[in-house]
Image (cartoon, rainbow, N blue to C red; front, side, top):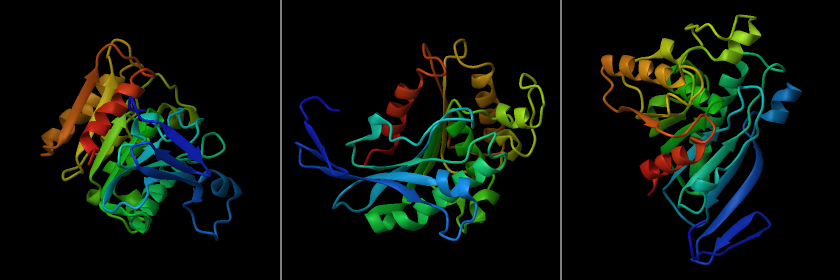
Length: 264
């Protein structure tokens, strides 16, 4: 919260003393009503936080972390009251669901936002996707492998930008765990963002914690992807190493960095 600004919350509305008004609409399903999978219907919901009576605002889709095995949708505090919409997304989790279920859910959620955000006043050409840890991995997978969003009739290259925070660029360790492959040994297959590197991607800003404090090889994996993407001719690819922060504490400063890139 900015200094000197008071907030009142009532019936899903957030009103600031500065006069701005925001609405939080919870538990919106992003899968068809005809969906038969009970677990998918339960998990595939999103929360939409947006400025009321405004037009053309940017929207940030946020995927929570938790190793693809835990976590709940969230609206990170840094992004509140900033003139943008934020979409917190739930997706199916391992081991109740296996790869690529959660990647497909991430794509379905983004497609829902692309197709519906204009109904709330948002600009469908100013949609950004971000997430921390497992959420960063999902951001990279749907951002680099065009097939996931194409299933829902959306070209990922129309997105305004991607902001994965401490995401794996090799195949995620939980996917290796599902296959009973040792999680300490790197794997680069069709479920590795690195394997899906291509030319012409949306603007990509990767963020990690300090290489000496992060999870094993997390900075180095992101560095590898940066090098490959630039070698393919992508100019709008950047990697920020936030020194002094580990895998968990990088969350808040990374959110500030993202906000500075998308504020209206």
